[in-house]
Structures are given as structure tokens and as C-alpha cells.
Length: 512
Figure 1: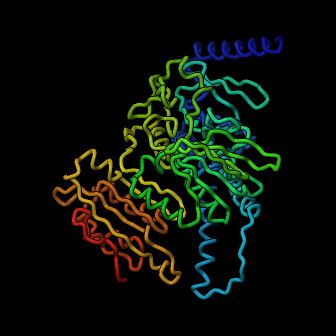
Figure 2: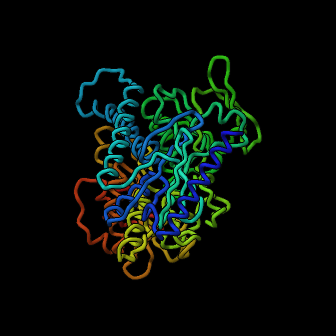
Figure 3: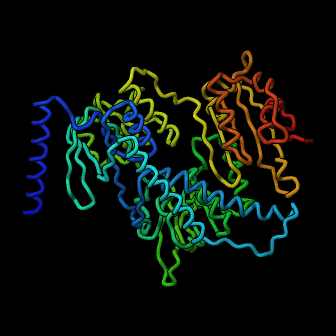
């Protein structure tokens, strides 16, 4: 109790000193303090520093329930985009090895994968990025503080170190960029004790072995996909639908391909209990929602991928008047990323209604810094943001899902051009291409503006990134027809689309 009182007294003294200094000088310690050292926070802080402002970034990672922790860079660098894509690449190489024999390569069988080798290489790369971000902040004269930040008032931030030492900072503007963390189910006994999340999978030293992935988000499908691809027995448990929010025809193609690829699916089921057996295996009990019956299975690893929670609970936001969305815990923001407190802003995943994507946070952060500290008035454009799901058969999209286009414009007002195609790379390898598909959702009026483009096939991210530029320029179906293709590529098939769903004709592409 004495130590607690001593700490409280010290904090009060610090707050009093900061307030007195501000009252006497009218100045703050920093022009900008960013709480959160992920993609958006780092981009915003560096941009503000480039504009000559005094900037600090507070970043602190609470270990996952399994004790996993990491360095500067946020989810994307440490437990998201970067390690995910590298492990996806490892799985693609496994498929390429199988294809290689058909192309004349003499590769002795059996070919096996070594998790520790892959994990060490991926983790070393991530650590190099952590260091690189620290160097960049130093080079751009941004003060990096490994402190867990919370707000005392609209201009005052309290930072707490891992040893409990408190630091008080003041700032003219504060930007919240703390991101999100994976959820555990609160109603499943044993879920936390015996399960992991995407916060842990990329930092495992040893192979997870036979794995159950619970959930059907892009995180669930991507992780299950690369686990299958490196040779692990992998099952996905789906409560309702896969890839909620994405085009559901495309989601079906993705899961169909994964099924033929070797990933098992348990549909319309929910977990009820996870227990550790004497053998060390995990026994999962689940309910079949169709029949109501219970079933069981044993696994080496159970991974939860059932959604994410905004990291706002410890920021003390409601007490200083920052409005949050009750259902999501996210910060309610305006078009200019401002919260209900004028000098406090939120970017990235914790901002309500924003796409939870790294490039979105980066661009929004840069534009916000320019609006705050330069004559710029440019707002972030959140329309037609492209993305890709890095499943074994990649799915890239930009614009509206077909279902959303129908809802927004009416079924009779849209025209869908589509094609099933066979990538040339699949031909010699004799790989199944029945899920390789392209769909352009257009309005029927005039030159037929394209409102949605969807692609499943190799290198979907590269293909979609190129066509996303066209959306910013008002791409139409007429523009597609006027574009010369690059032969022989998968992307070329996009500009050759000529069969409509409405026609009922076979949309399978034949010939070279």
C-alpha cells in the first residue's frame, strides 16, 4: 500500500509540474504524440517529423496469453502480413517442387519441410524489420519510447515502462494507432489455456503439428492454407460462412480449392470445450449446429481466428470524452480521422468503419500528418481499396462484391462479365484449375463503369494491384476492351472478358 501511495504521489507531482509549465509557457513537450508503433502510427510520425515537427511515438506490446511478444512495427510486421506472406511463400514452394518434376527437374522423393528452419528465417527477417523501424525513427528525429500509453487529459499522455516507471508527456495533437489483437472465445472452457492465435503461430519454434483452426476469416484461411501447404494435417472449423464481407461466390471457390488441396473443413460447427489429454494432445468437443449432436477430435494445436478486438480499453478514452462505438470498442471518427475530442485522432484498425488493412493505415497516417502540419486538405479516399487473401489459390479483389452491387444498384442494373481460365503454368504441371476465375461487376449504363473486380488465381495480389489503379481513374468495361494484354499471363484474361452471367453461356476460356 505504501508503494502504491508513493507512486500515486509521484504521478500527481509530475502532472502538476507539466500543467504548470504548460500554463506558464503555453507550449507542449511535443507537437504530436502517436500512441502505437504499427504501420499507421509510424508512417504518420515520420511524415510529421519531415514537416519539421517535434514528434514522439509510444509503443508497447503486451505479451499474448501464451507469452509471445515482439518488437516495433505492429501487427503487420510482427504477426501479420509479413510473416504470413513468407510462410505462404514456403507453402507455394512446396507445390512448385511437385510441379517441377513435370517440368523436367529430377528431385528425389520424399521431399519434407522443416518448420524450425523456416521459422528461424522468418523470425530473423522480422527482427531485422524491427531494428530498421527504430533506425528510421532515429534518422527522422522521431523520439521512440517503449512505453504503454494512456491519456490523462486531451493534451497529456502517461507512459508506463515494463518496470512500472511512469513518464508524463504533453502534446498539441495526439494520434491513436494501437490496432487490434485476436479474440479468444469467452464461453469455451480451455480455450485460453490450451489455444493459440495469430499472435503466436508465427513465433513457434517447433511445428504446430496436427492443427485445428477455428474461424473462417481471411486470417483463418491463410494460416490453415500455409499449414496444409507445408504438409501438416489441418482442419478449419466454420460456424457459418467463409470470408464474411467478401464476394461469396469467390469465397466458395477459395474454400473448394483448399478442400482439394488437402485442408479439411468442419462446417456449421462451434467448439464447446478444449481439454489436454494425458498424452499431451488436445481434445476438442464441438457441436454440429445442424443436428445438435456433439463430436470430438484430437489435435496438437488449436488456433483461434474468430475476430479481433480494438486495443482501446487501457487508453482511458471515455473518461476524457473520446466517443467509442459500443459494439466494437473502436474510436468513432470523422472524415478527417478526428475523434469527438478535436485534437485527438485515430487511424488504422481502431478507427470505426475503416478497412483493417496496412496500406490504408499508412496512407491515412501520412495524409493526416500533412493536414495537421502543412497547408494540405486532402482526405483519405476509402473507396475501392484493393486487397488479397493469400490462400493456396490467392483471391484478389477491388470494389464491391457482387451481392453488395446488387443491393446497392439493383440486380437489373448490373452486368457481370466472367470467365473460368487455366493458367499456362498449370498446364504442363497438370494442376486442377477449376477454381481459377475472374469476375468484373459493371453497371449496365453507358460505357459500363466497373464497380467490382474479383480474381482467383496465381499472383492475385500483383494482378489486382495493377487493375486497382483503373478504379481510381473511373475504369469502365469499355476501357478493358481497349486495353492490350500481356501474353501469356493470367492478368491478360481480365481484359478478354466477354461472357455475361446473364447470357447463361459457358464462361470457360479455351485456347492459348
